[in-house]
Image (tube, rainbow, N blue to C red):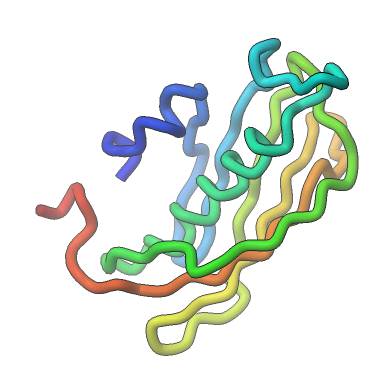
Length: 129
C-alpha cells in the first residue's frame, strides 16, 4: 500500500510499524509545510494522522477507506519537528471500524487527536493484485 501512496511518500511520511488494527507513521515538518502563522499547517498534520489511520484499518487484507474523520488541533507543530502519529483500533464490527490517532511532537506533547471511522469496500489491497 505504501508503494502506491504517492501523497504520503512525497511528504516524506514513513511507516514505522503496522500490526492488526494499529500503525505508526512519522513525518518531519518542513518549512514548506508552515502556514501564515509560521506553524505546521493543519492540513499536513491531518494528512499524517490520516496516513496512520489508513494503514491501521487496512491490516485485515481488505480494502478499507475513511468514512469520516474528526480532528482536534491541540498544540502547534514547528519547522523541524518530527511528528509521530499512532493509530489504534477501538472497535471493528462488520464492515465498519473506529480508530483513534494521536499525533505527538518529539517532546511527547500532543499536537492533534483524530477519530476516524472506516468502511471496508471489498476487494484485495493494491499490492495484492
